[in-house]
Length: 80
Image 1 (cartoon, rainbow, N blue to C red):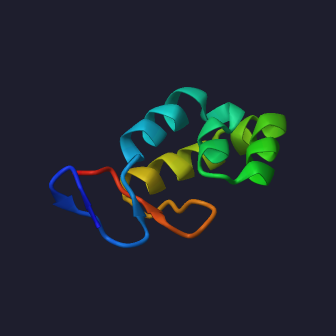
Image 2: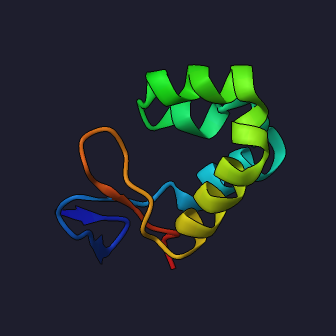
């Protein structure tokens, strides 16, 4: 598994920076949740304003710490 000259770990997605930006700017709408396939919680975030902002903050910190996972359980890494 080589991508761009780097070996990628199995089960790790490298779209973390994009996801972090989407969470920061559109987290209250659940956009970052829809992007990783978590449709149910994305809809919940729409109706609750990102769980009153607390859920968005938790998700943002988890994305920055590379512990946020997509629907298949793959970690979202920042790609450093």
